[in-house]
Image (cartoon, rainbow, N blue to C red):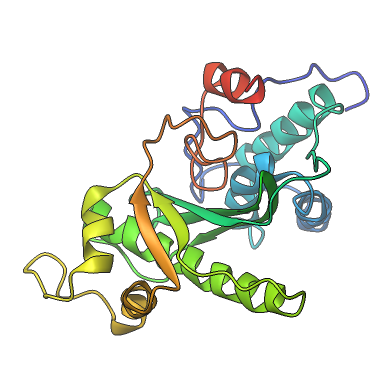
Length: 246
């Protein structure tokens, strides 16, 4: 990897990993070690979060195709050594959350992946990417579940800030799906949403209490982390450069 060519993105937009049962097996220990190192880096590099978590799903029986995807992430890191998070002095302490999902993104079980990020003022302080535990039957459901995950993290951060004397209410959670936003405000069970598990509806309670509120945010909204949410889906090189320059 010392002389490897740098890549512009951590994962190709045409890359769809699966079990690749016909592929050639590789050293499991080596693969898991590479994944472990990359997971450590995700603590400060949210731009590789989704790609690393995607590759981490195949640690039980990795193939050459999975190793190629991992090496691409490393090549991307080689080309972005100067990229990092910036925490400017004097920014506000307002909380804001963003959520997104890739509906039925996993080709094995058709489950969606939730991606969220949370900003304190203008500074990114928390991010999250995880495959949802159940199959979503619609984009609205997948986005609604992702918004619930975002809400849970926002509420935890709110409690932590109370120790510093910061009392925050009406914290915005931005989502790019109008139907999902309507679900957080309307307790009426609709035909297409009545099957959603009860535990996902806790966000409604906190919207009603005024702890948080949901608002629309277009996917190309211009947020460097959210605008096709690096924690929730793969984006192209053009979009990466556009967001980095903002």
